[in-house]
Image (cartoon, rainbow, N blue to C red):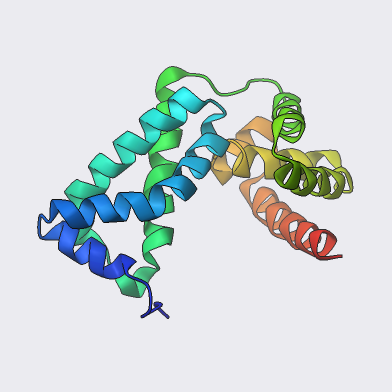
Length: 180
């Protein structure tokens, strides 16, 4: 159910009508979170900045396509950013090839994070360490690098159904672990 208190749907509606002020307000309200999404997927600030710019060009062009029935504005925006980030990574061929790289990148996020973010990342690392190696790798490939289930299945040499169920179970375990 859409949040009627949020100004975002109205900003998207006005953006679809060509309102540059509404578009600017939409950018101001959402760009910090969306930059974080782009950074998590790309792993590099300069790529994340390009992704964010590309995503907002797409938002300007496709604002009329937003449908509140299909999801919130933030879900729609995150989906656009995710697709732009994945396209950018494919274009630059900068995805990790080795299976250990995502965990090394996660460790670097933990080391350089703000103190509160560092604590959250350490908790996430602790919970990830409780997963078996292959499910942990699938989670990292999906949520740190934005690989699709098909790509993860190919990378890990397992059926797609195994990846789907493994991700689902792993995310449940991570949620329980992080809540404890």
